[in-house]
Length: 556
Image (tube, rainbow, N blue to C red; front, side, top):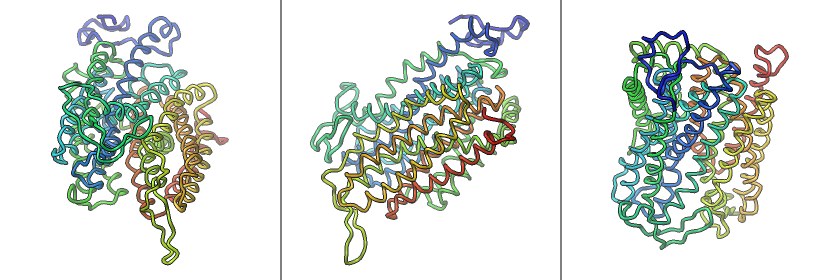
């Protein structure tokens, strides 16, 4: 990488002195000659450093779904409801931290932001590894780690905002699809690598001793029987080890685009702004979680549908009120996105795509375990269903749950590429229709399986339909990114991408809770029918704003 800042010929020397060696002042991706001779190589380098950093961010954010299962298998002294707080905390904070992260690129620069937000993930990854070495570690330590691991979820917003600025509009779908799609492989990577890493003393004496499984576990290739030695602490240490070279690559290989981040004020000032805004968001998240989570962790005063909007609104207002100086002016400019109706239509459409992808990624293991792990027997005397008898032919969630997220992430770049060719809204319309049908069909299969003594007979069609949902949501991720890149100018596209991704990320919290509640009520199909209705409404929204005759923005 050049040690001199790239700047326009007309940029004054005094301005150049304020730039770091990673800053680029002259950036014209829509200029074909500039793009071919200079821009493409720089953009490509930044993209391929961004992708693995984002991938590990996803892995650290979502690792609690696997860790908590293994904690139960090892006999950690926590109730399932207490362990649920770990996935709830990580899911909620990963989404909430995306709200300020949507604005980090303009405030702090791309290279500065990706470096710091990735480096911060080493903290929860390492502490989690240490905490898991001892079964007597108190619950609050794990809850703190889960809270901090939400940073990995927040990283998506700033990563997408950053990459969107590097590419011309004609290539936004492909570039953002690659960044998001391969980044989303963090879900599959986590689901495969954590069980694998726990099977051996990967870190030797430093990683600590093993523990003995008291219940059967599993991994990619099948069952791991009770009595087997396992190293659960590797579930944290593995990410800390991988992150070290990645943050070094981000520091030395990435750039700040000065047209997008004109007044970030130097590296230390950039870091301070990120930590300040995330600190404010952390306070809101702590209060919100305390009001929502049941005792003894919290007060249990707020319903989920009240707690989530309240956290979002307070976070947005606090950021604006607590900002000062140049930061206040920059945030004020970016808040202009909320006055644009297309911000809200695209937010709804992004919930359909990424919200579904991340929500189903979290909910699928639970659905497999509860619906297919038991024989469901109707008591003729009472007319009540019994769901407590173990199913000896039950499929393993740890063996199959990774397939859907893998397909969704793998196909995501294809959605961006196709949308670049034919139009984002057309692709979104098609996948929304597919998701309406597939979601309703999954609901019906759930109904059949949850009323069967041999539910495993429905497992293949259940998984096939879920793979269709994941594939459609993955393609839709690429198409919505393409649409956003066309609708909004370069200054607003990044913040809109960040904002929509923040709201969509709440799917990681909502979907497991809704499906879990309906399973508990004995009607898991209602959850999927409800999702199908939502998809149908968004299909109408997409048609109204972008496809119908007379639409303000036709078929972007």
